Figure 1 (cartoon, one colour):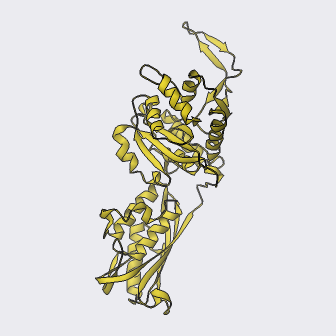
Figure 2 (tube, helix red, strand yellow):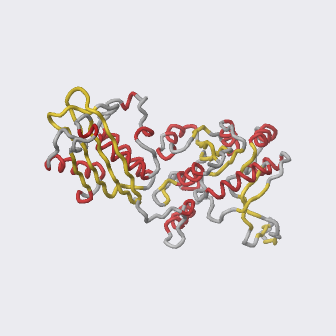
Figure 3 (cartoon, rainbow, N blue to C red):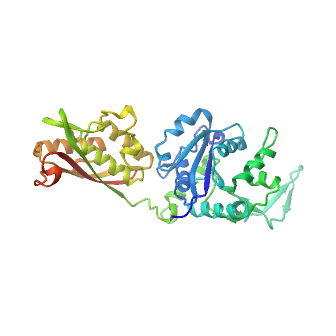
Length: 396
């Protein structure tokens, strides 16, 4: 696996004043929040060891709780009044050789751009992606007359902008104090005497500022012929599938739960929560299909709040997190294996109906069946019950 040598700062502390009161960073694009797009690219980039998200101080708890932030190593910190104050706050949380700084309002970031900037910054000390100007440029005088400007050698700057950490720290210490105002990190570094290299930018890596920009981004993402695919493999019409198995031993006392329904006369299954193997398998399958890990990652066993937790509630939370990623369940097939208790048609039908309700999926797309295990293994000898689930998900 390639070496991870960079920390990435995503600046998300702006007020979206030109968006008419809408938070552009959480506005959906093709079913995913704007911010989630660039977070996803940074998390997947091989060179990035850690991501630092800088947000407004009052929004730190809200941002920290966002489910799609927890797939990689992410730290959320409070920003400042100026953009450079926010970058400085993020920089204080970085420890890697190279630091990348990206605008959260640029959703269509690719891993290729991240890797190019990181490598160039490591080699040259600092780097940024640029695009040549293609439009004619005019300077308008005080009298309103348009004056021609030679665009030779003029480029548009994009993000992420990167630098070796010690160079960026020194530049902020020397020139980033009160009274200074820098439009981006490249300008600050250049003023400090650091030569900033360039790499080719990406025309899709646009910054969303006005409401019209957001609508254009949605059209770009949803276009049948020009769909933006993360790393070239994201197809908005392709379903995803998750497969998971869960097994628990029988414990003391009654109260067996399967699929959220209590099975009378059967001992309960031992587990940190309520031991419902059916709902655990379904939840794990959903999480795995969208890259969110499993229940153990989402709900830590060390958290006292999850002790004895209702698995139906946990599944509802999982559905919210899956939905935040832009996906919804479309089908589920569950197989239960255990010598006891015997699950007849009525019980299986009840579990099936309850699963359809929990997943908000038509009943005909839910399958539930059971096997005794044929005296094979712990399931077959009545020591445990296991459940396997295959869940299909489609875009919301």
